Amino acid sequence: MPPTAEAAPVALTVRPSAPALAPLAGALGYLEGRYAHAAELALPTGGVQLLVNLDRDALSSAPAGGPPVRTGGAALQGPYTRPALIDPAQQRAVVWVAFRPAGPYPFLAAPVGALRDRLVGLDELWGTDGAVLRERLLQARAAGGPEACLRELERALLRRAVRPLEPDPAVRLAAALLDRGTPVTEVADRLGWTSRRLVSRCTEQLGLPPKRYARMRRFQRLLRRVNTGPGTPNWALLAADCGYHDQAHLIHEFRALAGITPTAYAPRSPRASNHVPLDG
Image (tube, rainbow, N blue to C red):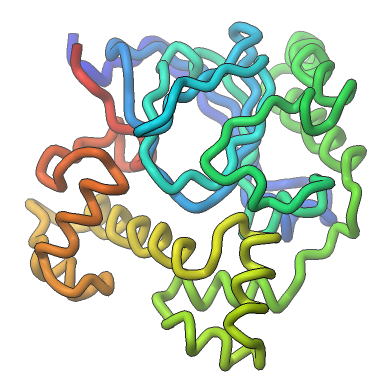
């Protein structure tokens, strides 16, 4: 059996139905799958995800260079800046929310930067509401299937808002400019901010200082090009197009952020570009 084989996969991705959530959450998803590989690398995006494991009440992650972290079955994955080793068995039945830049901020009492490179149980962040969320989602799935499960997750988010459900337009603009490769100094100038204020606001709401956020987003631009381009990637051309100094710089950054070389990069699928199966 090939290492990426799946048995009877079920995948559902929806946009938020609640208008208040649309600026904060890009998508909600439900995935059921069985994978032949025993481990996979999760590559950093600079974004934040909410994860709920409906198969069993546990989640775990082992960031590169750090000890494994284990939580209950509902957790918030902060903005990772390094690859992490995860168990594909955690994706046998998983519900997720992919937050937009600054999207998780209204649902947290602490700055998003406190979650950097961390997997944090929702019981730690939301108390009782976080502790019972998984059970509520299981009940919703039993009553109405995956879509009912996702809509219950939306309602849980709305109940947990501790700040106005309105993303800071200046921080969102900063994120968009950084995502396009705009230099950090130019972003500060566009906003009329000092560099210190830009660092503070980005760390508070995006979870990363602007230079590190820009680095993660440049890496993601590269992965998008690799997964949508025809044939074998031309790494020298991609280096120039994606904002790297040269091919050597691209290779160095790829090793740092993916834990593998560019030529070893073989994602689970083009749509799962941040999940790289590992043999053995």
